[in-house]
Image (cartoon, rainbow, N blue to C red; front, side, top):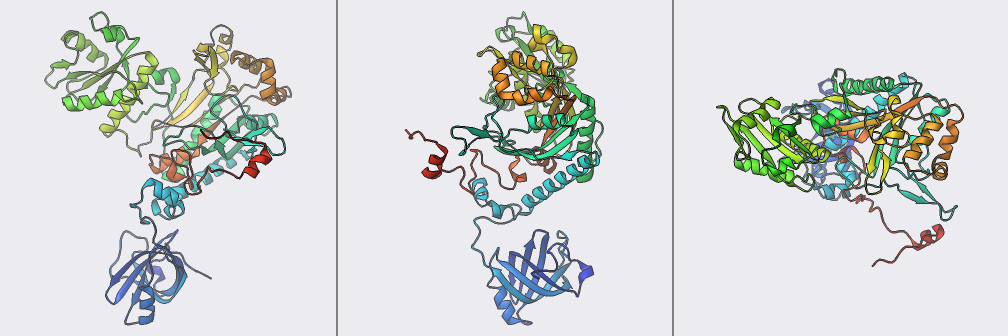
Length: 583
């Protein structure tokens, strides 16, 4: 055998045992007549010792090794004279009696260390080397444990894991599909699934009342730190349930993962309406680790000759505790922050409530001290606090204030990655209107049920209809979302009509679902968690890339495999595809 022990398991209880290890040369330390080699495998690091006086041939052979060479050694476990308290194996070393080189290695393009000298592009190109690093490997081990515990939790509650197809029909709503041409059906195309949404609903019609799948999904979208063209969902659906049944079940899953993986007991999750989330946090995924809520003061600002506020639909403020001593330079930095194109504010107004009770503002010439005191009272400010104000269109300005709030939370150290605060956001709008196209689109997807009491509004005021939908948010990150589905074919037809589908188009795109509903569809609903985001939260990562074995870069490219890439003309000819010549 190549090994009978791993590099992470030996300790003082193994002293005097003869062991065989195999792994990669992590470090070499030459100390005159003694050479120490750190041998690494997936499980840890063990120190090997080679003594020139005891075995000069073996010593010479060891000194010819290089970093990342693959070797096998046999030797005796002994207690180290100089122990390393930072390693589980730091109390012992191996006095090597036999050394075999299994494979030499070129010099790696970056150091295989927790703190590597490799940039992102180099590490992605040589991802198989990057995965040897302890920090990256631990993220994938965490991912494995979270998937395992998810399966355990759901299996114990009678969920059945069912695989759904990866080649399906393209859907007209939502993000762009990845399209796959069919050779056997010329001129026709599959799509890679953005989610198994319709298929899991059909499983409910089929009587599989509790389904789940840890499944790959695909969306042809622009990328961000928390987005990849292919990603993994914990996809779930249940029959004969109301909203609270689903929330309780999957709040339970979340608590189970925190307890078993991180040893954290979470309290019950608060529930917040979408309307309140936007009003108080300017975001449908509020970070509730800190307070600093948005406060509307439009009524206190009108009629004082300050045209910017007078012309604005909304004037909002946040109260930043203890920051009245911010310098002009710091305030200018915040102004530049909100003016960034990603945020888009035109300027920033401030009010300093100094420790001595005096008030200083950037709009002093328009508002008296008594006027400003009313603002401070509305925002519950205390001496030493700072008000920051933005104005404009309501929803747009709330989102800008939200970004400013998060920036201040980060500056003040209020966003500890490992202080986990969870909540449910509920009662989202069912529809959003595209004013240019003069039509409604589904906020979530076309199969989301309206709240029962709002169904009559589909005829009179569709924009006011609330969805029976919900998101689970952790530390300002949407980790999962779902809804109660429409299970009545007549209501589904009505929904398609509101969305501007003709009967023919609805039948063409979704006839199989509508037909299925005619055969006794149960009330059902579900949720999908983003596994990549969930793991990155547990690991404290800023990007999901380091919890995915082989991720794409920010341009959607796999620089290791050089994909996407051109294919042979013969393959295109078989598919009946003709490429336009490049200009």
